[in-house]
Amino acid sequence: MSTSTSDRPHTAARPPRAFSRRVAAAGLPAGPAIPAPVTEDDLAGLPSAAVRYLEAMGVVGRPRTWSLRAHWTGRFRLGPDRPWMPCDAWQYNAAEEVARLYRMRLLVGGVVPMWGWDTYRHGTGRMLGKALGLVTVADGSGPEFDRGELVTWLNDAVLLAPAVLLHPRTRWEDRGEDRFAVSVTDAGRTVSAVVALDGSGRPLDFRTGDRWADLPGGPVRTPWSTPVRGWTVVGGRPRMTGGSAVWHLPEGEYVYGEMTPVGLDLDVPPGR
Image (cartoon, rainbow, N blue to C red; front, top):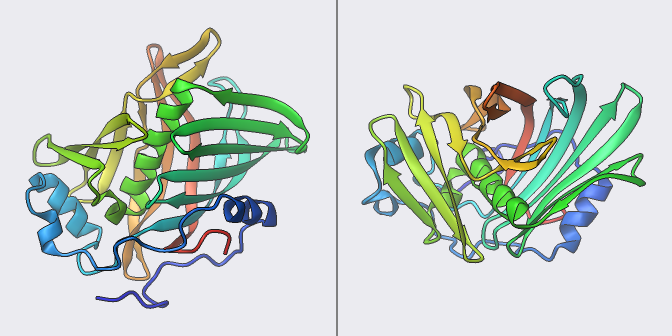
């Protein structure tokens, strides 16, 4: 089945120019490596829960997703006792070359704008935050960020573009009727997560141990999850209605982000 413009989820807003320029300059692939649609044969041998998930997400008969661009709104906070800040975010993910460019705008104190970039390119992850676009307030890189940004790319694939997972770099593991484990390998590094499904076969939660929380004593490897608020259908495809980002600290859960997708485009050339 081919995907027409009307069949494809689309965004109403256009991304910020700074975001589009950064994505265009990244030199990412502008098309799919495999133009053929997903078939039932592509699901053969996968755990039953994974098959149920992929079928529920509508991947069979559609082209293989090679990129996604998403627009989010919500709120974010920098610590369990810190105030919530409104945020607006755009991201672009590539699949032929595993890459993720995520730009978030926060409004600190309701007045001061802060922009943050989370990126993953060529096996390297980085987090960079600047107040007023000028003053660096956060700059993180290293092995912890490499793994953390890669598993976040995996999270995006599970929730937003499941056909991306039908690739030799992905491994699947049976975890019962309503969950499966999935891992992805890139640049010699493997990260994994467990995905729990709702009664319809769509993701209910994604949980991994391959991220590090930025705690007062430094980065600490901490369980991280992204519970999903619910699902709807947009353009003939399931789309999550919202979700949270949660650190599972020894003293309890710390929800630091609550986001709602307001736009999603699949198979968009970089920078468009």
